[in-house]
Image (cartoon, rainbow, N blue to C red; front, side, top):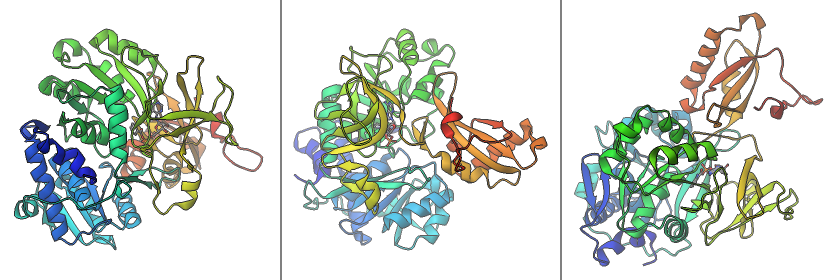
Length: 507
Ligand code: 3UK
């Protein structure tokens, strides 16, 4: 079985787990047998539309059965699913449709309003399937799946065939696709999920991080299916309140979140009395560094540990992690079995222990390359090693400590934000002369975007204008990118050559 869809889906039937629950989503439940059928029907439906091996299938899907059906169905016919962020704007969707040259797209109905204009303009796209609601001018996903054959033989792919892509934001705001091969998900599952999480068929996982993120895709997508466990999917916004409710209702054993969410959950009054978290054996945090304070407060209040680990879209999943029962709060832990990590200077030479340098990682789940980005690939992959763009040091006991990014990119609630993109949006406002966007720590010590704005008319500075500028950003680019603070300044710090000195504004 070299097609990885057979490993993650079909294998459970062969091993007698067909009646075990694979996916729960609100009031729907899918056993592994039903999942296998859904995957096969979706694969057949895509094939009937003419989707061929290696062709990309863009997925703008909520965390619902259509996501898992399409992801594995596409892989099973040898095509390449490309899940993308469901919070983007039409211009972003057009960019990924053109860059990937996707042949087909599967879109969850509630997202059609935003994605629609991009679908109309895309030049390589031939077919659109819409799931979970009126398909408009397109085909209904449920309808095509129901009419397709219920069983499908996997395309005879090799472990080195392309399985899926994931886009990762670039510093200019244009994302680049990390190309992942069939074996990559197996590697992440056998290392991190089995060795660190000790994931078992008796586990039930819930990830607040959505399936379109590399983090969520492993957490709730392929990890549980790698071991025959259950995954709880939640298609709506993962607010603290909603997450507490899902945990109380579905009683997962493992929960995956990002630091901003844990902070929001800790700020929920009476949570320990109103909600039942007793099913949890372990919580996981990733996406940005988990402040030690949040780890400690969470454990004191809910009696369960959060283990912080760092992963990247390019490496697929987490490669440095704390261990349950042996957490060093504030650190990213130590390498996951199967991965090696070193810290190098700008010339690529290892730095002495304790010194800050660039993190390089070796492990077999790393992407093959960035699609159509030859220079970026060469600047990122070094033989067996990949440079993550993070600054780290290693303490005497071998623990790795995050020290910030090597570029200006920000992680906000676990999601990339490019300061350059936010700046380019703000200078489009008629009152703005110049602007610099940097990361600024909030009261939980978590970074959020802050804009320093120079106005054309300095006297126009006001709270009303600040609010207007925030709304201006939210209306034009993905709303989570808006600056949480606006500070009006007379001028920006610059070098002799006129380059903005962002480091002088950070804080
Ligand atoms: C930062 C962290 C400190 C770091 C991810 C799979 O976040 C994931 O992937 P992305 O490509 O971002 C990667 C970058 O995010 N980062 C992530 N986790 C941590 N920084 N401590 C952490 N624990 O800059 C990294 O280069 O979006 C992908 C699985 C888990 C993930 N977090």
